[in-house]
Image 1 (cartoon, protein in one colour):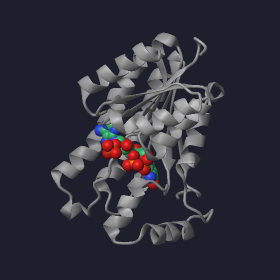
Image 2 (image 1 turned 90 degrees about the vertical axis):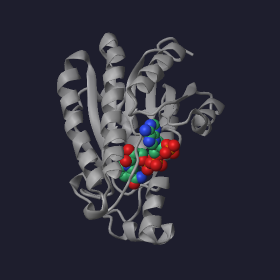
Image 3 (image 1 turned 135 degrees about the horizontal axis):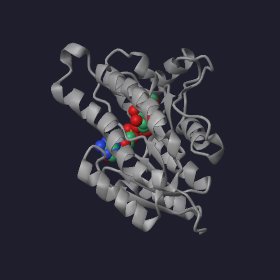
Image 4 (image 1 turned 45 degrees about the vertical axis):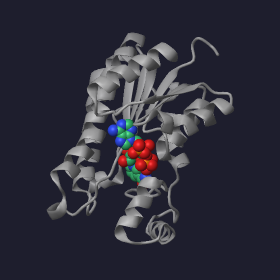
Length: 252
Ligand code: NAP
């Protein structure tokens, strides 16, 4: 492998959008560190990449744990090289109507999405600013515009948009861009869990979402990976502080 191969970190890369993004970035030529809660769960993504001739490692870390994040990023730098691309994708949902939402439903969602993106970005920017180059992509959501049963998640995803714009302002002078991708309905285990919660088969749930989406289909992890691939490319250096809705319509 070339010594100048860029290193990308994708959090929550064991499955869903993160796995598709990790594989896409590897196909684009990046060495990829797949971070997820449990190192063993990263194996399928990592093996998929290495079997296709790419370079990848799996790292177990909770993105909301400061020490774990410091250790994970140090390991990536040592084993793959200094990371200059970061995709903050790890996420959880704890949906409930406001009157039933518990303190821990609120705290966990804030902690993984917001604190996780903060800790990862603060740690990785050291490598980016030293390299005078970097690309950060944060996963927001159409839920940032408001979504029944998701007061916690909507607040976190809207918060990530403000976080992204601030990173763009602070890190721009160092050659680092920061953008958010806000997916609409994407077929993953996360949306499968939502279908289960509302008591609808996943097939019917997808059909209903497709019918209300202007392009008349649901989204897939590859749709999001494609947009992230663009945002982390070298040629996207003049695009920063943006929120790109990838939702089959203006609002999903
Ligand atoms: P997913 O299938 O549930 O995958 C999320 C991954 O994040 C899982 O592998 C999960 O690990 C990992 N994770 C959770 N908490 C973590 C933590 N504290 N530290 C490290 N990793 C952690 O979700 P997805 O649908 O691919 O969604 C990915 C991102 O896109 C999320 O930020 C989500 O909010 C956002 N998004 C998704 C949709 C959609 O329709 N699917 C729409 C808009 C935005 P475990 O399996 O061990 O829990």
